[in-house]
Length: 300
Image 1 (cartoon, rainbow, N blue to C red):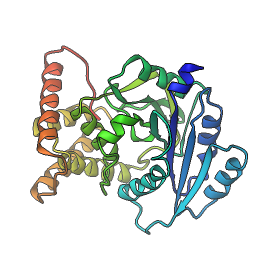
Image 2 (spheres, helix red, strand yellow):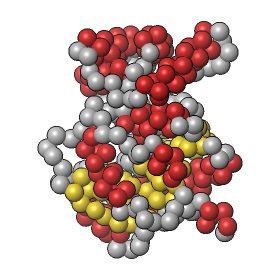
Image 3 (cartoon, rainbow, N blue to C red):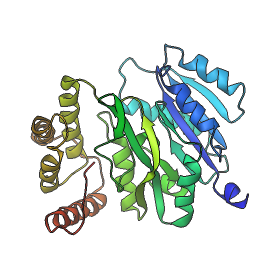
Image 4 (cartoon, helix red, strand yellow):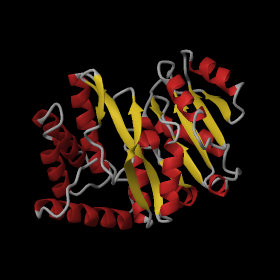
């Protein structure tokens, strides 16, 4: 019981037109061995049955609260941060130790959060933690190729409250990478970030399904890499590593092209110089380790 009290957490879920999957997420959360103290689900301009579904569960579970916000017609990652921050604003005065950003298209076992909280308990330096994403591919769920223990997908990021406050929460970045920015800032503030393969999370909607969307996504990821000041040598290493992912070499070329396009157009780089120095030093260490066969690595 003392462990449960010490490991109190809250969740915020930005949701827009998630009627296809949100019940899976809600069912997973209400079945947890340690339930959240509060769960704010923010409907970001939903026009389907998302709000109706959430209201039904909120009427039966006191810790669930639905908040509705008007969203602009242009859905982007910055608007998602706006929705998250609306939910977060309602929790600032609450008593909790951890806060999670949870997407509305995932599911997990009933001991998921208890397992993640145990990892936090074991390591006081752990600032961001989460599980291991599995996504539908070729008709069955498979481990996401981009999984790495050194990064936690934005869909399931759980923060130690002190860490979240140290980094001033999420930064609204229109083109994406908000979860990566949070991790970079956390690492720069002395916190650790880790995903745990034994904590499985099913992610029902992949980032991009069609070939055209995949190539667009890769290009945008390259732009984000530049905006986040990824070192050019590390970007080259990413290109080489990503060749094994669909659409293979073409995808790697598009990601590198996006990086170069952002460089040529001098897009604004958003991280402070002190954090960039720390980030690029870690990147160089990872590249050296790979080529010296010291440790295996994956890029985000």
